[in-house]
Image (cartoon, rainbow, N blue to C red; front, top):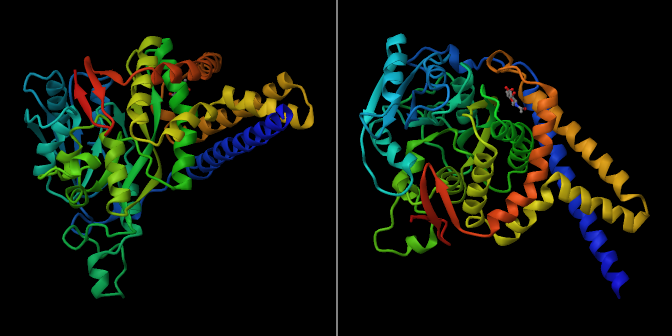
Length: 445
Ligand SMILES: *[C@@H]1O[C@H](CO)[C@@H](O)[C@H](O)[C@H]1NC(C)=O
């Protein structure tokens, strides 16, 4: 009886281990194929402003983030024929304002505006800060870039190309002879239709000039495991998986979305459009899910990464960050997904796999675990190297020994962090405490 049970458990864990490795290898393969080569300029960047679809870049800002001048500057030097930049603030005394003014003075030729508006419709400060720019954007295509994100100059062209290449431009419906790309101008580009691409995102890579242990561990996480799994899940594409650090979509699509909370959809006047997401802390994930499920719009990624500049984090800050998003996410995903999560981590999956192989074939657990971890680290290093291909000039140098220590610390912390996250539904974000409700919405405490 007991031996039948342990046999079944071993078979189950072996399968789980194989699935996790398949995902890791898929993420790694995607990184090698998509990112490990120099990026090519998009054809669209060479078009005249009249022929290119216009894009409104929105930078929601609050306070002096790490490296703010450089991250803002990166969207003033884009290799793209028609775009405007909206800097959004909620307070005229915000410390980010003088930095915005400096950047705007340096690039007077770029169409840019500052919008200051203290609209507060929900708990999510970023959504509050996006309401006015969404209303005032000149174009239907909007690219929302977080304040800590820096992009390379070709990113926008490749993103727009990926956005429209699968989609039906309006004029080509009438004139099948016309070259698809050349016929697309802002006036004739139709918002994406069901089955087409409705969102472009980039995988984040973490950069930091202040090497505190917390930021090193966060970097080790974002540069390896996070990127690998993000690429793998998006390659499998069974559901939306998006972080909102750099997202391009059509304003028209967003305006068609309903609130993602089923309980709210029953109310007499359910919130719609962008405002519908102000109740959630993870608005990015929710918007991605809304575009995917409500409008049947696909997501696509380009060969660009989003460089995420971290400030000096302590190890405690790192743990709080992970715990926060685990707590938010556990309300948004089915229970079994949350429970399976620890098994996707190197140590837990390695222990399970090693035990299963030992049970079935009789090999040594420590030896199997060692091989597993060495292979895991190799895949992580190779993924990280692939993702760094096109940003070599932008990143501060890092040491391999320090990386290895941070990587190991991250792997060892994964399970305790997950366990800690399961103990409560409360989160602290930018100094405020929230309770995450079962609808996924957040309530200020
Ligand atoms: C993460 O990648 C960035 C960009 O290549 C690099 O600057 C940073 O040093 C890396 N950090 C770690 C800990 O891997």
